[in-house]
Structure formats: structure tokens, C-alpha cells
Image (cartoon, rainbow, N blue to C red):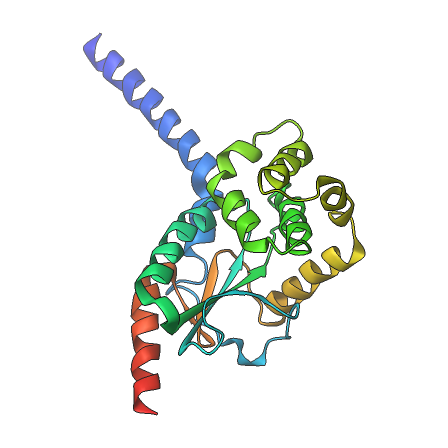
Length: 220
């Protein structure tokens, strides 16, 4: 009886672990793509993307950190916290550029990107960018995601009627298409993907990449 009980217990534990792996495996894949198992890329030959790009920090900073992100991507939300720390730590030496790369596997990512661009038309891109990442667990479960985004816009003091119209504007959709085109022109496949002064770095080696770029700047 004991042997049979042990076998059943092991079988049940295996089933639970297997189910957990199935649920998290897409995010594990996204985190691993672009790491050491894949060759690192250079953004110098990429299409330009939407202009002007959304950037935060000193325009003439020694280091440009360019992120290709997806607002529904959990690793992107975690990285957002780290990038905020980097901005505080390096100050005027680093500027951050954000590029849209909503993945097809995320059903609400495109709409979230449009919410950020609609906010941008009222001068509040970065406020919406931060809110979308920091409230990710709320809006991805919302029954009416547009209503949630409109509430965020109202909280920011935006004209919500204009915001709602702008979410469907062709100019908003075009900016997202242009950023996606930039990503696809260098064969990016996952988010988050980071470039420091045009050289791809993994999220884990972000600070190393910044320090190396600052040293290069000192030599000039």
C-alpha cells in the first residue's frame, strides 16, 4: 500500500509541475530569446521606426538605451522597474527610447500600445507607459480593457473623449506599425529586447552594457 501511495503521489506532483511549466513556458521562451543562445544583434542597419521616437532623459546623453517592448509582456513589466532604477542611477548620462513591439500572442498588447500613443498626443506618453506596466495585472484581466484605459486617461487629467477617438486614429496605428517594422527589419522575435548605443544586451547584462558604453565614450 505504501509503495502504491508513493507512486500515486509522485504521479500527481509530476502532473502539477507539468501543468505549471505549460503555463509559464511562453514567458520562459520570451526571456531566453535574444540571450546567449541567439547571436546578439546590432540596430545600426534597422529601419528608422516612428519619429520622433519616445525618449526620456537628456537628448545628448552618452548612452542611449533603446527598448523594444510589449505592454502585456510580464518580463517587460519586470524590466520596467529595473530601467527606472537605471534612470535614477545614471541620470543625464543615459537616455531611454521606447519602441512598440506588441506580440501576436498577447491579445491586448496592440490596444495598450494605442492607448499610450493616444496619451502621447496630449503630451502624456510616459505617464501612460508607466501606468500600463505598473498596472499590468489589472488591465490584462479587465472585462472591458478600453474602459480601464479610459479611466487611466481620466486619472491623468486627459481629455477622455479625444483620447477615445485617438486610440483609433490612423496616425496612432502608423507609429506602432513603424516601430514594429524597425524590430522586424533586424529580425527581432521577443520582448523585451534592449540595445545600448546600438548593441544588443540582455536584460541581465544591462548595467554591464551601459558601463562599457560609458567607457567607450570616455576614450573619445
